[in-house]
Image (cartoon, rainbow over all chains, first blue to last red):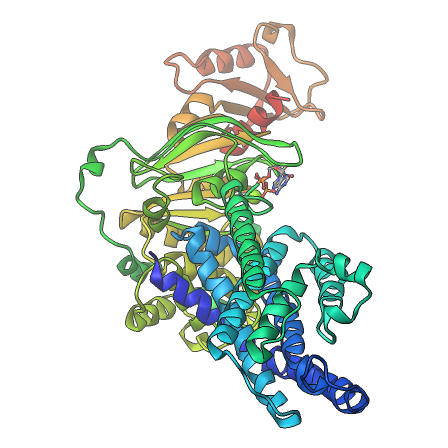
Length: 253
Length: 349
Ligand SMILES: Nc1ncnc2c1ncn2[C@@H]1O[C@H](COP(=O)(O)OP(=O)(O)OP(=O)(O)O)[C@@H](O)[C@H]1O
Ligand SMILES: [Mg+2]
């Protein structure tokens, strides 16, 4: 294990986030706070409880997920795309490091950033609505898993993208709709039956459902299924990354 | 020696001061002494066997290249744009995957033993690829860390001072001049104390003074036991510093040869005879001599092989005298690597 290499990559990525902290940390937090104001306070007061949870509180896990997913993907994809774009990646590729070490450095840093953002949002939410976490351990588990697997997913996008447009494409066209339709702001049970079935094909539903369960013990699908789906996604990403590095896809070809 | 037209221009003082800077003498200290290992008995440090590369675009950039690089030599790779020089270097350094063939460094395979081979190699890339917002100091620390070496501020300080970058250590890379950036790249390549150094066009876009200093640096590095492979478009450069020269074109290695042997083997010499009175045609007595008459009819050129005991010069001069021609001046020219290179590259489609 080349620990020094992991450390410098991780440190470099964290430093980059720190230097652009307004963009890295403040902006996701501000936009989440805006959701609270609009959905939680303005509209939420008109909506009764959902499955026994006040609406403003109900949307907290979904909002956190929304921020975590988009931030994990954005951070990790940019983190690897940019050196590829400028050419500075040559140094990482010519250094005595394995792909596991590269992953730990880049994905670890992106996941850390998302965790920090998640924590800030959770803290901020506490100002707006009463919050109680039923299963803090599970909550943390889901948080970690989400940050890691979606940072990994972002990393894959960053490797795959060969221009800025492609870098934005997947997050905008795929992830954002999936998250919005994944029950961030509502319970899937509120949908007509046909749409409930469609929702089951949306992986984000499982993520939000499981995460919400760890807060309120209220879920659209069972926690076991949620956890399994997240793990499957994580393993799928790992296999993809492994294959990309093994073949040198878009990196060494 | 031909007089360089640049000798009369005086670069401004600050440029001269920056211009090394590279103070090559001291850079010696950065390079590990050669480890006394069984490897020493091995004939070559980098061994390339039947290497081919076809990019995903379908373009074949390297065609079955085999090459042994000797320990401690300076090898210059010459070739026109797109010949495959950077591709070759990139494969050895691990930046590009080979399509076929293998490479070993000190006996270790670059794929299965990549940790060993890559720690031995330093690379100065062709492009000035540097992060914009890092400082000089941070980027060097980053490079050292990537290569798995623990931080060593004292060593870094020495390296920066010898590259004349010490006063720039906290500057952002983007605020540096092109020459400084190249020095930073050299620093990054040397920061992990490599034994094999690849310089991909180290003197492209570098002024004459800086180039000479760069050559000096390369020589000093070699003296300390580092093997150096550099690519260049400047024949003059290969002629000045290389021990051996390799010529690549269209992905093929056309030849690799000791520089002197190459010039000896292919180098023709020409005897140029200037006449007092111009001729419209050569006298028939000279028909059996393959001579060239210049357009103005004032110069006669005789090409010969200087390594033969019988060059024919003596006879030729006699025949010319007998033909009644009056000589004004005589001189000889030696063909340069450039002529050799041009004839090689032109010969193959
Ligand atoms: N990533 C790539 N994808 C497709 N083709 C490539 C790629 N990189 C290089 N090539 C092609 O391979 C050939 C060799 O390129 P290479 O960069 O090795 O040449 P070079 O000898 O270093 O040239 P130069 O002197 O201009 O630097 C060129 O025709 C180039 O267009
Ligand atoms: Mg090149």
